[in-house]
Image (cartoon, rainbow, N blue to C red; front, side, top):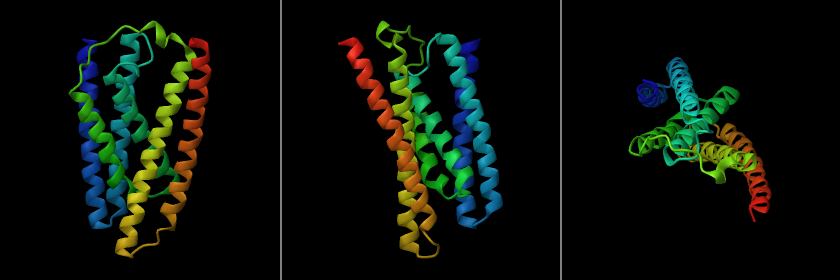
Amino acid sequence: MLENLELGLFAASTVLYVIAWVWHLRGWKMKSAAQNRIAIRILWVGWILHLAMVGLRWYRAEHVPMLSAFEFVTFFSLLVVGCFLLFAFKERNQMLGVFLLPVGVLLMLYAAFMPMDVEPELPIFSSLLLKVHILTTLLGYAAWAVTFAASVSFLYLEHKKDAKPGLFDQMAYRAAFFAFAFLTLGIITGALWGDRVF
């Protein structure tokens, strides 16, 4: 029963991510802030369902749900969309969703083709430092995805010359700093964990 619920949450969040992306495209084409606000609301609902799916997976697996390939990819997708929501809220810029949401959607579609079986935690993953290392590294990669989307947005605006790209400069710098900080923390925890193993 819990497995079916998890599968349903996974499917629902993926569908809502696709709908939110289409709505972002619509808002971008219509240049409508109202359409973008609807897209963000849809995305929040999808993200909350995705978070519930990850929480249910954690409960079922009895370990942090980022150790198997399916868990890793879905958790990374959760962080990518979460970083987008954080930056979209902070920067009041919705155009970023047009370029970033396909990353989260493609990750979810990629995860759909992976085995979803719950695997027991291997002894090597019992270290808290390794879990912190994986989490901070994934957060860093998610922030780099935001930087990528901001850069693509900047290049688009430069080509169109119909808006000031300064906002995207600031967003890319903030996301790059965020990514650098988490990746550095991930490298440090990886080095500390490596010393414990070897």
